[in-house]
Image (cartoon, rainbow, N blue to C red; front, side, top):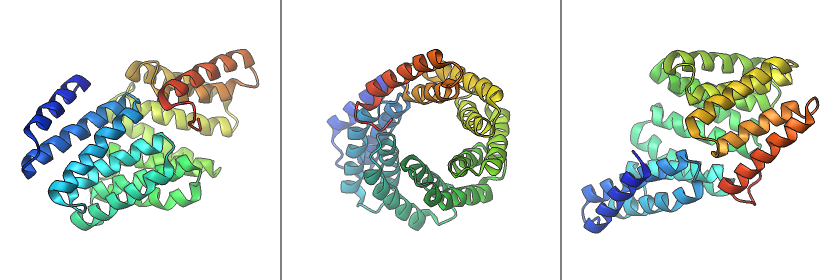
Amino acid sequence: MTERNCRHDVATLRRVAPRTRAVARRLARALVQLGDVLQQQGRYRDAEPELLEAIAVLERAFGPDHIEVATPLNNLAVCYKYLARYLDAGPLYQRALTITERSLGPQHPDVATIYHNLGGLEHAAGNWTRGEPFARKSVRIRMRALGPHHPDVAADMTALAALLDQQKRYAEAERLYRRALAIVERTHGADHHDVAVNLNNLAAVRHARGDSNEAEQMYRRALHIETTCLGDAHPKIGFSLNNLAVLLKSDRPAESASLFRRALAIFRKTLGPRHPN
């Protein structure tokens, strides 16, 4: 759904006013959908008020511990992670996890999603060993629920491998990245955005293990896929440009500097001048 359609749905439901639970649920879901569209565009600061409103609407209608509240809590935490507001994100994830485990049981795939996100938060904050148990739990729950070849399991493997990569446990990280890449390519095709995610990560490991040529090929393929999927101004493009620039810094400093400048311009525009990136 487009942003315009999402905003139209939200405006229509706001005029009705959420006097019943059914209307409150519809309004909150429209707000969450709008927040998701904005996050997909990399507009995390714009997504925040929509998700905050969704949480407030649902808490009024259902109470603060209802399962309906878990999704916007999780999504707002994702938004804060990308804005480097880690201390704000953590409690939201923990609330969402408590609600989801109590409502759906500890082995539900939605529980795995929140553990995945908790691991990702610790990765972003640089707490790699602390994030590893969350990521391993996510893989274990999801694999039991969905089987070893599901693309969601591949995403969990990728998240776990990223934490191992940062701990310089490259052999295990590479095995997980390659398994995840094979699943995603088989499921979604060679040009899917998740393929680019795994290529970026695998390239970093190959670079760390001394294979700069293969790493460069992977980075460039990932950048091409991401630009095709997301456009050339999304913050994820900035991460890919930065990764390639780091690889080229020693041998091709002029090209590296150009890539760093492009990444910096994207980060300043989309994440703000105070963001750590």
